[in-house]
Amino acid sequence: MATGSRAVRRLCGVAASGVGLLVTASACSVDDAFHLGWPRDSVTPQAQRMFDLWIGSVVAAFAVGALVWGLIFWCVLAYRKRGGELPAQTRYNLPIEIVYSVTPFLVISVLFYYTAIIQTDVNRVSDNPDVVVNVEAFKWNWKFEYPGTNGPDGQPVYTIGTSDYVPVLVLPTNKRIQFNLKARDVIHSFWVPRMLFKRDVFPGNIADNNRFQTTIVSTGHFVGRCAELCGAYHSMMLFEVRAVTPENYERFLAEKAKGATTPAALTAIGEDPLATTTSPFETKRDADAGLPR
Image (cartoon, rainbow, N blue to C red; front, top):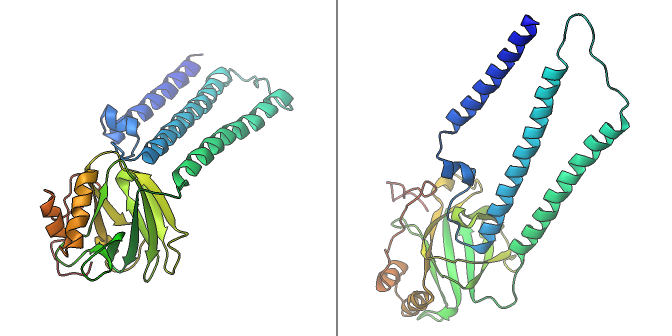
């Protein structure tokens, strides 16, 4: 009996050590733990829905894990060896077999249902978006074109990065924005972490079929980057989304229509002319500005 008690104490000690190790390894605040690795302060309604799905999925996973581990420890304690007698064996128990066959199916069905609902909502597009932006990716830069606003040359105005600055995509808040995506050379990927959204950008004339829509609900500077390994300078293929008020957005387009560069147009509306960085997701422009972008 004493040997059994020592085994139980040893098992409890191992469990407590494991919990302590997990807490120490996480090394994060309660607020960070609640977000479970996802960026805080998402800036679109779609991002908030995806965040809610992520939290719900993780909570469900923790609940299932706690149940499974609880049953394991209960079996270890309740059916541990006592003397030389073999514990009662359970086999061909139809109710138990039904439970452990049906329960995973129910869990997967619920997760599939909510995933399908939210994915459909995120991918939903309106026939009449408020703003349309054509996004063209190429080694190793981004071109953002604003159709409907023409410059002095009669062509749609655009912004593009140079060896001196990262391209800045200016967008209005509280407007439904459509992004038409295409690549000039290889597969790239349009990723804005604060939107909790990423979509691959393919070469060819497929912009009409590769599009998505979203609404940015707050002003700010949000880093963007290529999330698909596309070549030697992939890590430098950065851009910034600059969300401004609708009034400042219209002023920005008016400046671009006059022939102003993007930095000059940003300065005209009181914005920092160059890309800025303010979060762990946002990496400063490489010191060697002469490398291709």
